[in-house]
Image 1: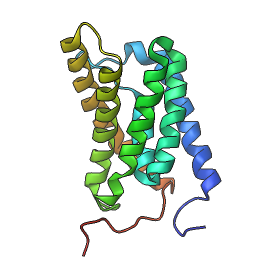
Image 2: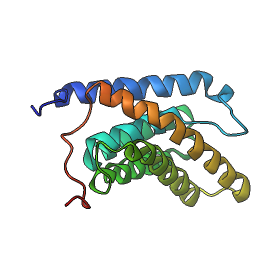
Image 3: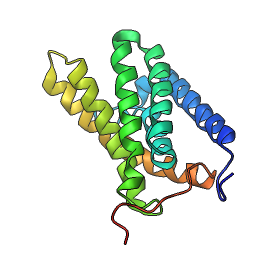
Length: 172
């Protein structure tokens, strides 16, 4: 076991509980969680924070699970949800190689990158004939998810979720 983090099984279990709770909250109150015509997606917030702390492999895993769970709520674009979430988790998991793990920039970047990748890939894979409206919704969702991702990132750090942080590529 690495010092300063929970055992792997406990980390997986805790993140899965957060993912399940986020999907249940989204399913129950998601339609009323609107701020300036944008809706946050709490499962994206959880996947982004977990991926930034646990790396790209686990990020892809939690993205896959998050995509499955959120696609179960609205099975319109089932495959798109799963692929987009998996991509978002994987790409976000690569951030610690570019940004130091103890940097506050990583907290902001995790929500921003995960939301952007998921939103843009979903738009590319399943475009609407109202592309402008869809793009505006993605921008609003990215903004809200980025703001919500910061406290989730630090909550996971307090709960000792995360791989032992390695040096970033730019450290000397």
